[in-house]
Length: 132
Image 1 (tube, one colour):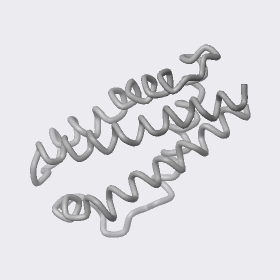
Image 2 (cartoon, rainbow, N blue to C red; image 1 turned 180 degrees about the horizontal axis):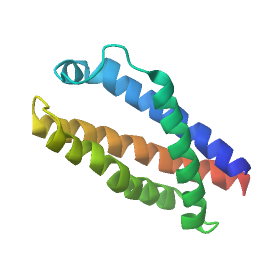
Image 3 (cartoon, rainbow, N blue to C red; image 1 turned 90 degrees about the vertical axis):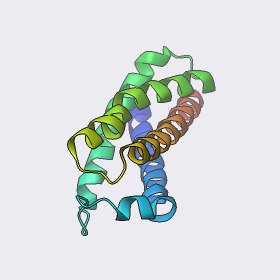
């Protein structure tokens, strides 16, 4: 249970930090052009999503790693979760919503997602290794 709680906290910290930097510092112009983004963001729903995803990912990492917590395992897990979770954001959203540039959307969301889940996977393996 301790692994799940710490993994969830780690996911929340990593996700918030990387997505904050992406949305409000690095890719401000990209998101400013998106007309369907609310001006007043409901942060509580984002935090709830991070908690739910963090719990599930932390649980699945423990099953995936089989007590072998290496950076390679963490990175591989992070990339697999990128394919699973970021594929929706990067590919399905521009298919449904009127985004300013489909290619810019795919690149921005894809690169940020790869960074987010890679950092999380590596961090998760380091945390779980310490708790082993």
